[in-house]
Image (cartoon, rainbow, N blue to C red; front, side, top):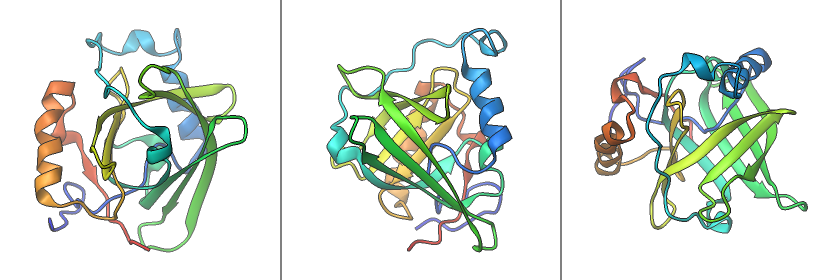
Length: 196
């Protein structure tokens, strides 16, 4: 396993999508809405998603191994995301994180809906209606052991795993793909996981 390097490559994990601070989430989502912040983002080519996601296999708990730093996950470590199917067909999203000392947990609940039924790889996640953000699955292990999530503006990026740690070979394989997605691995923040 890869050792921790505080603030750089602690390669231990943190759970996904979104967590914690209301104002950070709302501000971030506003930037992703058409007409609000889209003009400030560079014009990137299309971000390719995986061919198909079996949502039944994707459901369950994911640990965040690495992410682009963002306002709504400040001081969040030990982050996990739990996905489950709701009665209305949407996906229930529950993100949890801990303080850096491993203490108090924070939790936020939202919903995700599939935005592209042909692949199931493009979702919209909302924690505060009517705001939502893109959640695009751009890489996925055939056995659903890891997933990589991004969005068209390249502002957000997450590496997720079914376990609190990821082996070097798998992680390095993902890192080598980042330039092709126009993501910068030097911006990654690897956050410690506490496991279960």
